Image (cartoon, rainbow, N blue to C red):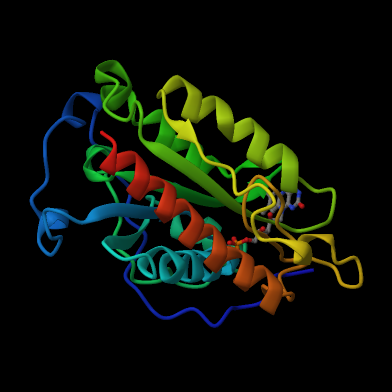
Length: 240
Ligand SMILES: Cc1cc2nc3c(=O)[nH]c(=O)nc-3n(C[C@H](O)[C@H](O)[C@H](O)COP(=O)(O)O)c2cc1C
């Protein structure tokens, strides 16, 4: 069944970061423009084909910026599929969040990564982005930085936990500090009356065949994760 067009906004063609690893340490002037020097910088870095993860990313950003002294910014990772394939998959145009380069990760005090699952693991677009962070890995530029994850799956049992768990390897090799959301959201995670995505690993949603959108509770969980994560990033930066 073809996945439907979403309520996403227009944007230009997907951009692919084809720069070699050797360019990963070159600093970019564009992302530091607006940030105040004392602020705790939280980056929300996502890949979303149909818009579900993008919706969670918006709430996560809102939650992060609700913490005093925290600035949050949303980024997308580069698309790796050709337009023709995306068209056949029914993917809508990308949202207009800027495309991040690997070296820009190093500017953040904390990073939340979001992606849909593919066969129970992160989508290849996010994996390709991680594979392009070899320069950062060599220098261990991300070591000690807090990292969180959020995700979307088609089905219950389709990868809400395996997608999160298999992502921990990426964070581990970078020496990042995985900050799960735990059960800090409270009793709502125990509500069995409705279908709900998300887990102690992070916020999540179920897209079903593409027609289901994040529920109110899933969006609240995403907001909470952003807020909780930002408070931890702030504490870690303050104690550095
Ligand atoms: C190639 C492919 C593999 C997928 N594999 C899974 C899977 O293993 N488990 C699952 O629950 N959903 C799977 N899905 C559904 C996606 O996870 C779903 O489209 C996604 O969560 C929607 O998020 P997005 O709108 O942010 O792209 C797959 C989708 C595609 C296209």
